Image 1 (cartoon, rainbow, N blue to C red):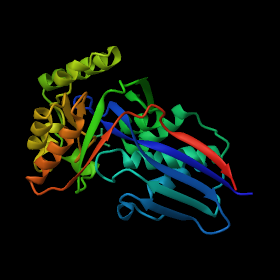
Image 2 (image 1 turned 30 degrees about the horizontal axis):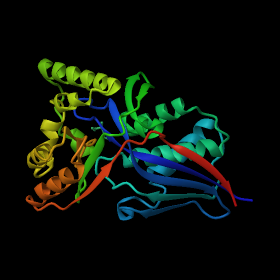
Image 3 (image 1 turned 90 degrees about the vertical axis):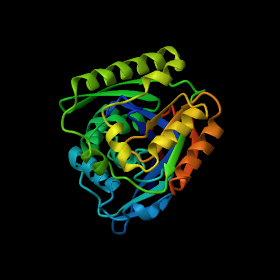
Image 4 (image 1 turned 135 degrees about the vertical axis):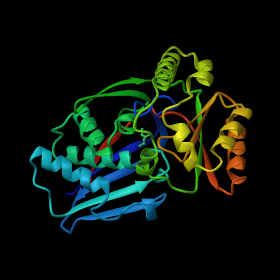
Length: 305
Ligand code: HSE
């Protein structure tokens, strides 16, 4: 009897404007990663959205994540591993796709080894590979997750986001690597800009925790990363203005970009149309998705054939 372990992992939109590397919101958009031990050679199979942009080899971060868990738990890596990724998350677009692959590999491998590690430990490992905790924390736990790193450990609090909040994603048809979007950031920031972001990030979290969503219109601006990254996204200012004019409460670059996320309590369909048209004016095609927050986080299931 063979065993297939599958993890369904939600996408994330991170930073939410001022909460750079700290805030992450899980979205109802998923990839699934399945791990099987077979009699054959190791293989990585990728299907679904942007499959051509994701390595189908042991270079895939999901395989590296599986190996990490086997090694750390002292379990010999089986010769025949099959990792199947059914991808539903546009790749290299600021929606946490790499984090979902890392988590999928780690969670399925952990189950395969008899669950030697807790989710908290998995988050520590996944954040170390990803380089920051915000996207993997949201994808692991669901909801809106605040993350803090202390040495090699990640501390989190999960909040439930109001289901009436719709996140309109304008996903342009070009990719932007996180490395490129981090390399453009300054090495140090002005004290005033740090205070600007701390105040807004704190107000944003308190507003979501207490249901004061009107504050989103003032609490999601940023001075630490978006002013630098916007130069990498043609039409950024026009897309932002189009979303706000059409009734969005606020906008933020999704993760490292290039996707732009608008936060809406109403008019979400028209906000999407206007964002699409604004990108089009800069000769950029974009896909629009209107989503709400996933509250479940990663879900692991085991099936026996
Ligand atoms: N917080 C990260 C960044 C998310 O903005 O670079 C991207 O993975």
